[in-house]
Image (cartoon, rainbow, N blue to C red):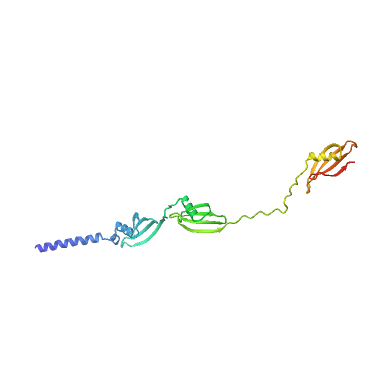
Length: 238
């Protein structure tokens, strides 16, 4: 009697288990849990888990590393990584200031620094240096200060101004003054001075002294050389 009672209990337990299996089956999607998927990503790629969401058949796991933020799709059935997407690239942190990059460039190449700019995408500085004959662009690592590249080109020398086709003539120095010319004219003709004019020439110029002759009541123009002080001509008005 007890034997049949024990057999009956076993049959009832198996029946309940079979009923539970058919009513609440364990699907393939439940073979890998969310925590197991997250741990798998950390072991495979490192970094820190930022966010985990469930979609049909997959876990979407967002994680962050030093070089960027990624999104991985994990198969919930077998835990395999089905896809990996780079959401945002993160470059290395800038370590050098502009002043430090300028010092590194000056230590590598002599000359005058004309311009410096930071290239964020490559995490480097470009420093333009001029010497007397060359223009150089130095690529300086913003992380280490190392000179990554140097580009050199010759500077154009300014053209010398062309000489004037006809040099300007300098005015010859006058040896005698206007008063001296009047005095010389009065030695030639005793009269009253009406007007004095200087005329420039290539050989020093001359004075024209207009005078009235007191004796004849006539007007004369006396030409006096401005350098030699000689009376060149005397012209009388009719």
